[in-house]
Figure 1 (cartoon, one colour):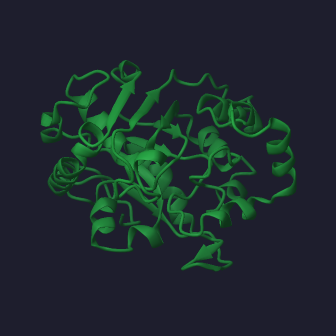
Figure 2 (spheres, rainbow, N blue to C red):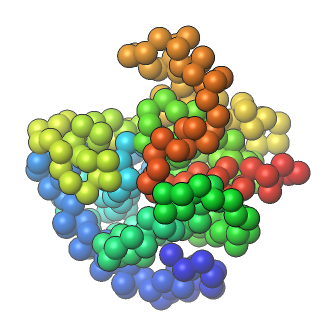
Length: 295
């Protein structure tokens, strides 16, 4: 997405992108991906009645993360469906003719410029950021682009935004406090989302079908109760991680003590480097945490 904010009007969004082109791309990409959720695999959607009366701006969806692209485009299907009066279903693709166009998601600039398909996908709503810690598979150190931080704020002021607080597809990785600073600054309605089955159904990027017949789920929960003035960043992150079922106690495979011990011994960079080509960055990597410590 272009990183220069422009005045939103009837023809362009806040980043200068043409609405008619965004509608066309969402329709085409939605048509292409429809059978991934309603044919080869079945996506069960629940909790969308909670989205019906949400305001059109300043809504933040926080979700666990299993694939790069399939997670986000499933949400496109859901949001478009809800906009057209359908609850807990994406079985009627007529909703693609009237899409939700002021929906944004945070993604790494390097990945979204990878090829033509990712560039087209980025035009639909990616708020791109440059990683401050890694580029092209190499460790780097570079300053934060403050314009990128402003763009995330602008996206919230313009519509709905999705972020993945863990910043990785690794299950039960710790959440990062930059998300909490974003919440304290913008005071959005925060909707937790829990996804499951995407890791089994798709490859890591979410572009290829890995296995058919998977019953994936996408669940929207009640808005979080947050005291924006008095809740600490740690308290907000704890609420988020519990709501998206990524706190250590939700891990049914590995012992809680093992998870806690690993979290003490591994640095944040260790977690980030596990997914060298991870495309959805969180706000800590962009320096959001440092920029807002004084808030």
